[in-house]
Amino acid sequence: MSKKDDFSSLNISKETTARLQEQYPTIMALATTPPEEVVRRCEISSTSAARAVNQARKLIGMAEPITAAELFERKLAKPRITTSSQQLDEILGGGITVGAITEFSGAFATGKTQLAFQLCINVQQPQEMGGLDGKALFIDTENTFAPSRVAEMSYSFTDDPKAFLQNIYVSRAYNADHQIQIVEKADKIIQKNNVRLVIVDSMASHFRAEFPGKDNLPRRQQMLMAHAETLQRLTESYELAVYTTNQILSNPDSIFTGTSSLEPALGFAWGHRPTHRILLRKSRGTTRIARIFDSPELAEREAVFHITPQGIRDGPPLDY
Image (cartoon, rainbow, N blue to C red):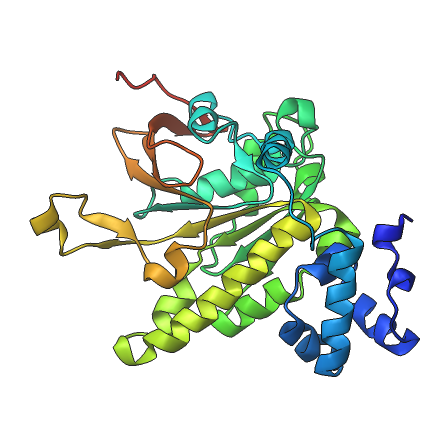
């Protein structure tokens, strides 16, 4: 065990250390958590929580800035999960990125969940095949997880689909509070089982149903922002990727602005949280079109792919 993973390196009591390790398997996980959350989850004093978090941050070097060149090299080195479509991978900078939240939004049957299934398979592949040699945690908010469909896709890689299904952990989230709780308690299953991909399908379902109208908007925004912070913490603490799906809404202002009439749901509170946002739309037959909607790193481009019985596959390239 390296010093950066050793809780005994923290100058805190044994009792506090035991409570911290029960909730946070690594020093990195502790360092990226706000002290207020540590107080709530570990039932320790605010003074002890602040001391532990600050020492953890110092231990792993979070207190010191790095150069932009170093940051550039780190981002280049981050692995990605292939989507099984070369065109889609290309506009995504190589695939679904570790250390980031990637959101795919679209109407019904545009391929959001199908892509989630494909990623659950692909993350299990070795890195040279576009995977991470890891497992997936699928948080299902709409009862859409279909083991039979995942098994059908996996036949492209194996004659025994159970080998892939055993590496996908499925948590059914029955309401917004339960969804948040699953993510907050995900540290242990991630650490113990080498989970490298967390999927939330879909992010909007419970929040839109349970917090309708303007009166509920402030509470919904607060919960969403805290939920997003926890997801981002998981990406950085465990070097994994987060893939979320989202519903879309019609934008009434588009009549006057001339912009697209469709936009992702959940408004500004959630909109600023995903690192990359992609819009999906249907074309003819099995064809789907993906467009980069918002990203600090990726240019606005489109890619064509198909949803086939074997899974996500390439389509004819777009003519620019």
